[in-house]
Length: 376
Length: 155
Figure 1 (cartoon, rainbow over the protein chains, first blue to last red):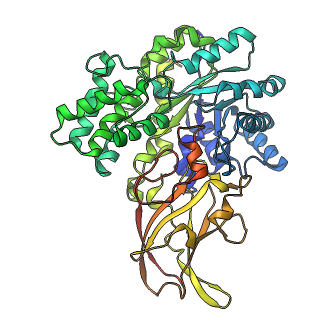
Figure 2: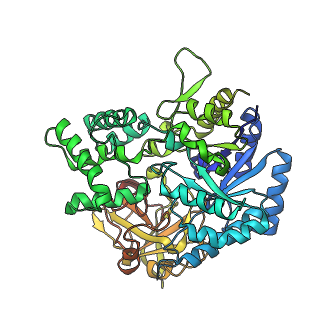
Figure 3: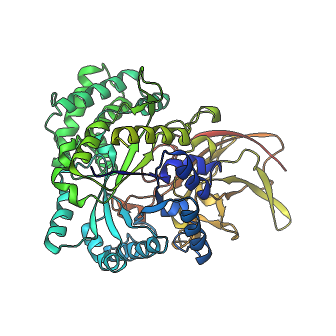
């Protein structure tokens, strides 16, 4: 049977890096020594590299030295698109493509095989940068991130382009968050500390569980064409003006209705809390079916690893389905990487130091789960 | 992100300009998990001991360059504020702060967009002024609410 490979995105160690508990080499060593044979390295260019995008030759040499010393492999470099970078205009597609081409060249210098772009990058930009990727044998993978599901337009246009041209250097990087079906407990507690009522968080969780089994006013709502940020902008506009693009109106009305029928005299915050139910993409493992050839790498997004009751030393994230999708990937013969991407740390950072999350520990637990579910 | 940890606790001090105490400064980290292009750093909502110090009273020292005001910072589209690095916020105040403890209410604004978004033209024409309310959590306000720090003036 094909073997799924394991790695870590250093997004997971952002807080550890912030407090200077582990630098870049320390993060690489952690993957090498404590993760049961994981060997994949994924970085965010701006986070890990000094004075991005101008990495020195000395640094690049040191980087390759680390890869060799710790027996690890550069897998994917995550890149960004700050369209306001120049502040006097919104960057054109051409300018964004130029930044992406530079990122691809930088990834090549560092030995990466893949470059991951954000979910919202227009396909024209990817196509403009593609010749550089082909020349350097780097695959561009567009992230498919909650709430965008796998069956939406954003994936289809990539599939169509690849099918029409035969390129081997374009595809998708699904983020495991698309398999999340209810908010994580750590996020709910964070919301409550920031003024949410516990009742509203309970309604939110119930709404998510209803959507999962296809009942309730949101059962057939599909807002698959937009990112979380864009849904949020439209939602706030709707609350203020009672107007929204027709595309959103049904979903937004349902959120208001669910809130009104469950909470007497709801606050503005209550609506915002229940609204979060729209930020889950309702993806199922079998949605990966026809997309398998286009999957370049996968982000193993998670929020909170806890010990499975009565199974000491074994861990799970109770808000995300891991078992179903991993079984599916195994059957489908996926041989790429799943890279742990821990995102729960941000929900503790309003708390005293001793209550902050332990990212290193969380990633170890996540890797225990991956290894076990993969069946190594 | 990093709400309670963006301002270094032992960094508050007065600064001297042209031979007299012209204001105070303190060290900050970047609340965005990947750092940010310096141009995208748009200043602070800042209230010290009950007095609001708007963006126009603030300068920022970064990458070993002299402090720049936030209109100048907009031009730093090729300069990166690395995630690992501290910068210093300079605040104009004749005579600086008095000895002892001070209450700083603080919120950092960085425009860290995830590509194009509705209203992004507005951020060019009429960039939002850093304020206490959360305008756009994913793009501008990396902490949800302003954070209160109690800092002792070091010198």
